[in-house]
Length: 159
Image (cartoon, rainbow, N blue to C red; front, side, top):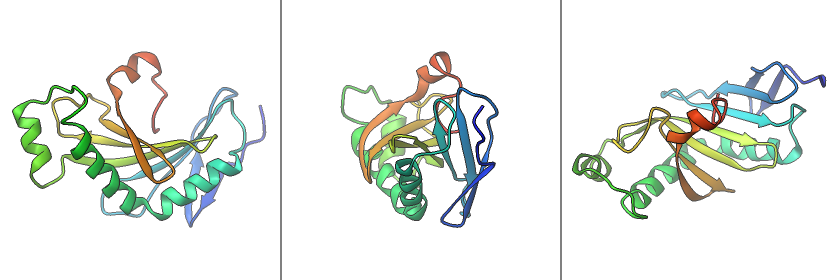
């Protein structure tokens, strides 16, 4: 196994190494916000994070509140379309405050791609793992329904 740093310090946030193996390295840390919020950096196979991963994580941490707002607005706009069958209750939750999305967790991969998962999504269409928004840079590009993630890869998403 490669000697991995036990922690990453990015924008005054400490991400602790939470895996111990050759397949995946994952560092994770909580952000100082009123609401539980996490950022994780994942590298497969296990190695130190790339420059792209560190730069992306720095941008995500630095703009976290704004990115949560962007992701929330994107979900409100995108969920009613694209053939998704929303219940009347879900439509109501999306159209009126407060936001049905909580506990945001960002996951950054070694190639610099990332997503923002809302671990809590008070919608019938959201599974136990919530909903996620994939980003390219700071622009949201897709909604991920995580209902299949448990079957496919229990370690996927944010730790």
